[in-house]
Image 1: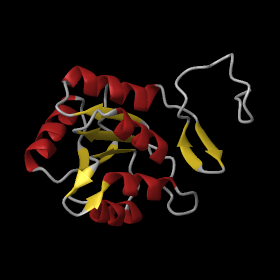
Image 2 (image 1 turned 30 degrees about the vertical axis):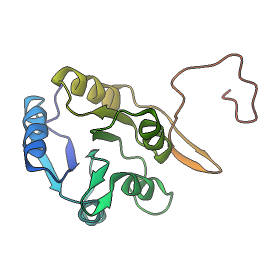
Image 3 (image 1 turned 90 degrees about the vertical axis):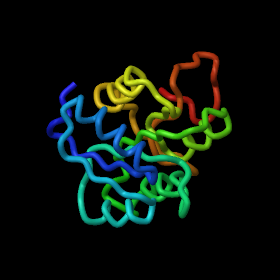
Image 4 (image 1 turned 90 degrees about the horizontal axis):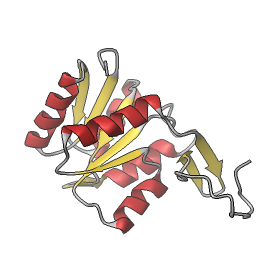
Length: 158
């Protein structure tokens, strides 16, 4: 994987985690990496510059990563609505993962993470992106990971 031409924004407030993520990304060739210590700071950067990938934590001293994701995914709010987003956070609880999915996160990875796990998520974001969908209450990557031939609901995929 060569990320040398990829513009990446990391939204994280713990210095050691920032350095770890930077190190792993550098191992994949990434050179263009910006860091924001809060969702507010990240939003300001997103308004000034286009990024190819966002890596965001869920919890901050002053803010919520899910609020940032929801704001990014609001159609018309920003030019970054289709931005691939990896949520890298400390909770693997089903309710937290579901909340991230429902906010519009593209991929999810629990800390502490392995380089292999990080690589797998990056490969999915870059080489196997999920199509975006818009429904009455959601805009973002398709939340469904598999086809369910038995599903006959109103919003069934073709």
